[in-house]
Each structure stands twice: as C-alpha cells, then as structure tokens.
Length: 302
Image (cartoon, rainbow, N blue to C red):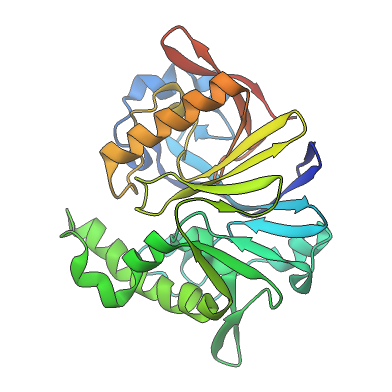
C-alpha cells in the first residue's frame, strides 16, 4: 500500500484490481510500436508487458486525508456490476472495502467522494448492492460530480450526444446507461454537481480538464511547498507523458483531450507538481520535466 505525505495532506493508494487489460496499442492507438520498444527498460513490467504486448494497469482509489476529513478520489469498478461493454470487469468481485479498511478507512468515515469523471471504473464503489437495491456505499459522504458529465451521461439527454463512430463506441454508449443507473443516479441526493472550479478545502480544489469526457476534471493539491495534480484519465500510460498527442481509445474528444493533456503536463513540469494518474501501477505517480521541446519523467514517487 503506497502512502506518502504532501504538505499537510496524507495520500494513500488503495488498489482494487491490477493486471493486463488489452494490447497496449489498442489502449493507446496513436502510439507506434517503437515508443514502447524504445522505453521497454522502464515501462516493463508495471506499465507494459513486452512478451505479450499488453497494457498493464491498476484500478485504484487515492485516499486523501486533509483538514481532518477523509476524501476518496475515484471509486473504481465496484462489485456485482453488469458491464457488457468490458467483459473483464463484468460482475467483478473484490475485497476493495477490506483493503480500504486496512488503510484505516471505514465506509462511514468517508466525508467526500470525488468522481473525476463518469466512466465505469471511476464511479463503481459510489454504491453497493443491498437487498437488491443500489445504495450509496459511503453513507456520510458528499459526492462531487462534474455537472457537465452528469448532464452528458444522463440517459434523458442521450439524443444530444454525437453519433457513435463505430460499434465499439456504441457498446460503450449502451454500457454508460447502465453505469449511470447503478452508480450515479442513486447518489444524486448526496451529490454536489459542481462547475467552473470547486474548492474542497484550503489544500484541495477541482478544475475542468475536458476531452476524455466533456466534464473530466483534475484535483489540485497545494499544501506548504508541495504541489500535486490528480489527473484521472488524462493519462492511461506513461508514453502519453513522452508524447502528449497520443490519446487513449476512450477519449470522447481526442483533439481536446490532447490539448488538455499537454497544458496540464507542461504546467506540472514548470511548477514541480507531482502527477498522479488514475491507472498507473507500480509507483503510480511521477515528477516530470522538460527535455528540450519534449517532456520526460524525472522521478517516480517513492
């Protein structure tokens, strides 16, 4: 269990699932084979498996303890979910709540849940199935959800969304209706649908980072001399740090996603922010720097 201190904020990583998902160039379709091969010495084994060509990742929650409150950043896949769009996680069952307890967090202790965006692997443990009904997992928490995403993924607004580009995207669209029903609708009574920017406390704030989804967001941490950006799915793989123009196959607006990614990463390089993505396995967080006109990783979080 990875734990570190940033100013007054204690950060703990709690992993729900870790492993191979799909071929790396399916997940990051813009990437050529050589970007993986040329960086195999450090991409393997946490981020890429050279023997299989598979993308390796984690589904995890970042626990932030700040100003006496417990804050979860993203809530993974969840148990008992119907997920036809991704069979790997269909009706997944893990001991995630036990792992959270090992980190010193009981469900009733959670004060704030942040969903950086509305995708199935970021909102799953918002709820759990009790007596056949989807019920908020964290009974005392306020759920912070980007309003733009809530409106975009609300089934009542499905007719406003662009026509799917292919059959795979259509499956994801159909699956998003299920995700909304089991993981978003049941918590709306406890939710703050924020827009613009949102101040969680004096150490933490939310700001838009659109492109992956219309309402994708990042959590900014600023405490003492320490800075960090919890960037959600702005990054799926470290190769996107080396080449910010490479999008994942899940980005709703690829051009906007690439522009946002470059902007956020360049700021991190210029200001010394620790970059904390949602799905990096291993160390899970990195410091980056400029290397001429490019970006590179200078150090992984201890």
